[in-house]
Amino acid sequence: MKKIFLIKSISLLIIITLISYSAIAQEVVELKMSRSNKVVIKLMFRNGSVTDPTGKEGLTALTTDLVSDGSSQTMTKSQIQDKIYPWAASISGSTDKEVSIFTFETPTEDLDSFYVIIRNLILKPGFKSEDFERIKSNQKNYVDEVIRQSSDEEYSKKALEDFLFRGTQYQHMVSGTSAGVSSITLEDVKAHYAKNYSSNNLIIGIAGNYPVAFVSKITADMKKLSASATAFSKPDGITEVKPKMPDGINVEIISKDNALGSAIFMGFPMNVTRKSNDFSSLMVANSWLGEHRKSYSHLYQKIREDRSMNYGDYSYIEWYQGGGGNMLPPPGVPRSSNYFAIWIRPVQTASGLKKQYPELSNINIGHAHFAIRMALHEMQQMIDKGMSKADFEATRDFLRSYIKLYVQTPERQLGYLMDSKFYGRKNYIAEMDTLLSKLTLEQVNAAIKKYWQTENMYVTIVTDKSEAEPLAKSLRENSPSPMSYSNSLKNSLSEKILAEDKSIENYKLNVKEVHIIDSQQTFGGVLPDKH
Image (cartoon, rainbow, N blue to C red; front, side):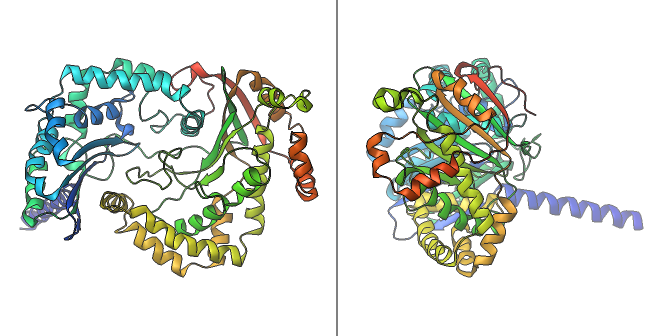
């Protein structure tokens, strides 16, 4: 009798567990907006580039793009575009480290017709060779050429992630490596889709003005996907990404032809995400130090405004997708492994300064070494002294209004709600506002001391070949790095700024390693092994 009871108990436990996983896998995030004239649908799969097989880096991004920007078994790519154009509907796909998302938007009146296209794209993707070759070619061109040539700022950001996460499944770009993308076949895509775009690792999001019956319809349809992936908690075979803290300041200088300046991105692993209530404290600290694209922030004032060194200087407590173009952080890039970073937009090289100002003909390096010193000095001052009460209150009040701008559209509202699920929250924006309203200066200053430091840092600098060697030597030797001003600019500066420059030019940095890398070696080339 006891054995029978035990068996029944175990069976019941298994059934409850399966029901629980099923509920998680088919969770639907709803944002009903009865006055809206549109519907937004998001399908978030917990896979991302971390599920790329070794040697096939870029497979997840290629798969997502082939489904969202390709054909179904019933319609070609051009037929789909011709059909949805009169509706002003849209279809897009995105991939990050841990999620892939399909986003669909349409006027409410066209939902039924549009949904037929959505269902066929997801359940019956065409995987046509012509679509595959087109998308693969574009992706390989980005990995081989665009990332290195279009924006040194974006290049330095991607290079920092390669450096900081080296040896982990976060290391390679979401778009992959040259060898990885080259090796991907159409059969690889089909197999990857079947395994990793599963009913078991899917969250469905719906926003706008939609009928109640639609929720049941899409839920039932998405259950027709394969159930091969692990339930929505962690992708199959993926271990937790734990980047190593560097020993001292480790620098990689990426040397390239005809770089117009030195683009700098630097950071260190930080064991806190939106999941923690401490995140609200760091939001305030970070906003004061270097809020993205905000001229009031401290780094911007010190480096850009006071010294006219570049276009801007910002800090981050999580990955900021498309920072060069986005004024507000977009949803859809939730990550469980996090880091702090400082973005110093390109500063001038010695070569560039010499060409503009004859009075600077004797300088050996440009502004990069000084800019790094200035940024880390100001951050360390903040760690040592904390925020003032006035700065804390002003910044906290600003943030309580500012974060509401993150969710100005139904698509962004839905995206942030779905990201909230990733972090175990219900509504990140609302919850952060509540936490901010109760936050104290003491909590913020305690979080700064707990999570921030300047002694151990990964630094990537994309610069011109003429600057690489002199800059590397200056960093290795902790040589003085006096600011190089034109005569006209120097004459306009206050004695206070010039005196501060003298102090900063000798500020001791804990530099342990400096390596120069040719641009063609990055993202799959031969790199020094730091870990």
